[in-house]
Image (tube, rainbow, N blue to C red):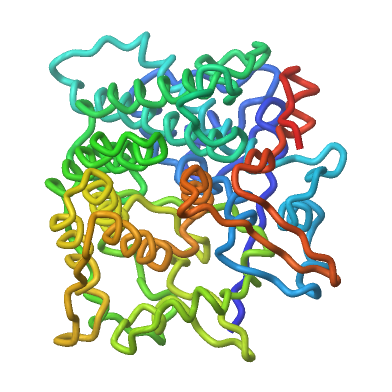
Length: 457
């Protein structure tokens, strides 16, 4: 059965605020008129209500990178049926957005930033005391986490990949740190953007509980997981490893795939037990009709590997994705145990700890094989271990929103750099490694309101 997806279009972070469901006070904040901004919540309970709104903080994460990646392809007929933004993104066109387009990937993330800033601004006026310390810390840490992940997602979509040689001059994103809707904020450098993200996360870390009450809420484990992801992008493998280890000290649950029903949809009735933080991507229709590349499918070449039966299903002869969707029919974008084992394994290999790297990889893979059939992988060198780990990462993290970042960072290494191709209407399009189109253009509406340099295409 085909999935029905909702494609949300948020009408501009600076010019509108979405109306959301929830309790009355929560709606009072979220329905604030744009000329007055968001009314600053005045007490901790109000702030907690705002922070708990999953429609704001857990949904609609940027998805243009996923459309630009090689996780799926679409035939010409499907491409012809989708909107112009999806069409143009898919073929890496010079012009992505039609005139006056509202670009959800930009708007929703800055909406998260705005609400996080509103909470942080409100906290300044509330004294911390012995009676409210736990709630105060959790709210402050949560707002810092959500702002950090929003900045990170924007940076991965609208700025060029991190390069240590040029990051101090490469343009990042506007770092909006206040609730002033009229402030003109220029693009900070990529280096300064990562400094801000790291600062927010390091500040959030001591304020949050080890694990969340709900998987859509921040926690220490989620902070460690996001830091591990970020340091992997930065090429700081020791820091990425340390944070993956800290994550796994708190939470190391892996799902035994033998206990899952491949005919179920969704595969997980609620959340995967491997998730520590759950969010979802914007639901563009082109992704829903995306077909699994045959080369990727064939890479699952062991008959005892249970992942193909859970990850994919056959629909009228096409292989489509299955278990990557959550119970709300959105593409899951999570911080999870499987990613941390893969981060840890990769970092161990890059740090020449070959034996530990393979042990980490095998710890994950044994849960994906038919019971009693798994033969542990071995490696002849640290480089050989890295090749195997990246191959398994490619398979394990399909359609999770992480491939675009992986392409961006791995293209810096000629051993793993690849050119992407599309064929539409008999025309072949390509995206070479390190191409300037690895940064999506800034929406024209944003530049009209806040004049900042556009990304070259």
